[in-house]
Each structure stands twice: as C-alpha cells, then as structure tokens.
Length: 46
Image 1 (cartoon, rainbow, N blue to C red):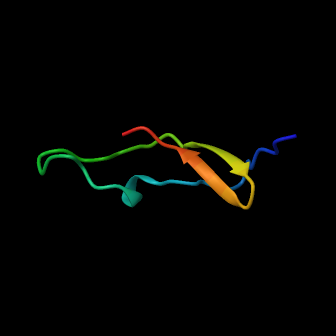
Image 2: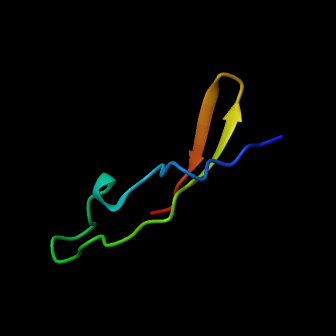
C-alpha cells in the first residue's frame, strides 16, 4: 500500500529555476513519488 503525505510539500517554486530570464515560477505541482527497493523515485515534469 502507498501512503500519501498530506502535510509535506516535495517541491516548491523556489526549488526550480525558470527556463528563461524573463520568466518567473509562481507555482508548482508536487511530483509523483514511489518507493522502489531502498530508493524513492520522483516523477517530475518540467
């Protein structure tokens, strides 16, 4: 079973840089995460 964390953000707008100097990141969607063996894999789209 996969447990969902409701109290923790995995990514915030300040965690990424804009792809162009004239752009600003004002929001973000948290990535999908899954435990695989002893690792955690994140699916984050950019």
